[in-house]
Figure 1 (cartoon, rainbow, N blue to C red):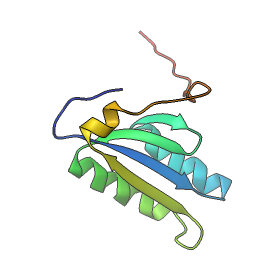
Figure 2 (figure 1 turned 135 degrees about the vertical axis):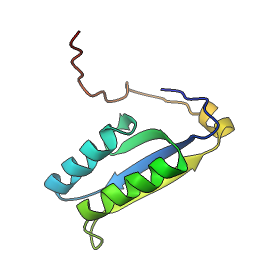
Figure 3 (figure 1 turned 45 degrees about the vertical axis):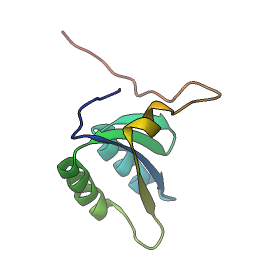
Length: 98
């Protein structure tokens, strides 16, 4: 998923959530916004508005005492230099009905 829309920024979103139920809810919220690339990491191309909406959607799902979600913005140059070593990325199973 590579977007060249100048209004969108690539965000690497990493989360550390010890509670399975909350972690699953956060995973589902992020699934609609980007690509799942590691077990607790998503890559999302977002506009500023989408970033604010996502943060607002995640807040009630988190326990601020134990949970952490980090948003790392990457410029276009940095995003083009991302390299993966090792196993293939995780993938959500998708069913397409025509």
